[in-house]
Length: 300
Image (cartoon, rainbow, N blue to C red; front, side, top):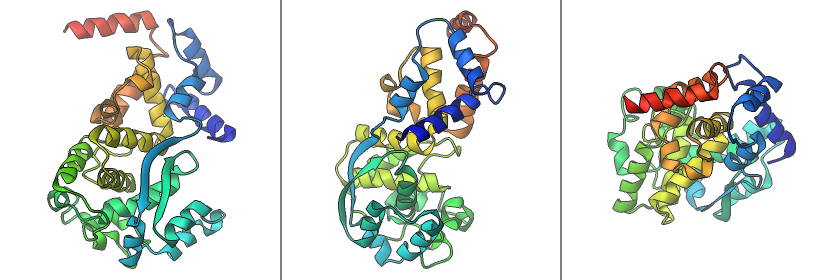
């Protein structure tokens, strides 16, 4: 991550550290008043969003080419979206021009591009669990994941839902994707990736399907999913890392990815009630009192 980007993310977290009540240097003052050992903000930042990004060990292969052939993704429309932003970077252009063995790498520079590339993968890839998915109903054309996908030939992405053989998954791989997707949430919604009601949900499902199709196991799917969510929602996940450090004395690397991705820590309402409210309390209650309160609650 570039230094300006790191400063921008860090300041954003500090500014919202106590729900807007204290910003910037105030966040540092709260941090310094908390008793006991604690990591520096920069250390937490480096754990959640590593300087060099996160390697997934995945490639797109011919997945995007299959979507392009089915006119689910029209490269010209994607290029138009970025025309006023300086255009697409060369690595994205190469993905649009042919099958690719380029390793997928999450960073602050690649995350938003990967979001848009993985979105149609999750939306359109044919999978047996999609037939009974909560996404598949009369509301399908009205979801952000479908109505928002306008980069195909059809004006509404609902036309492509569960229609394209983008990837090849065995029954066991399909079952694994369903299992992990049902337990993987994101801070923008209260639904799991199985209910892909927004672009992040579709992209996450596509990422899990891509990983499973390349013989990654469940633990790898969870690791890759956490890396993606961390770069898609950096402010929320940095706060989550601070929460684990302050309240549970656990560093980010010691918390299982599946736990972080659960509804409690990654669902919109769960994250708000557990993480954000917890951090707000740190500005009002001495740390010793918080520890005593937590111990008392554990005995109930």
